[in-house]
Length: 69
Image (cartoon, rainbow, N blue to C red; front, top):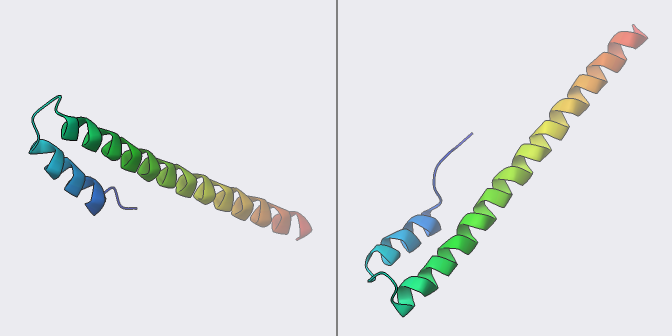
């Protein structure tokens, strides 16, 4: 499992660092960064849920096979 920060988020952070705080561009890029971070965390959450479901299905399958033996 990778815990790396996506390249798009890093680019936005670098750009954001060049602006003066409370400037119009600073506020704009802050909103853009928030959107990217939100979508990134949602992807991670969905992937984690999928892995959990797959593991539960494996456990159920092996338990069912053990019962049949």
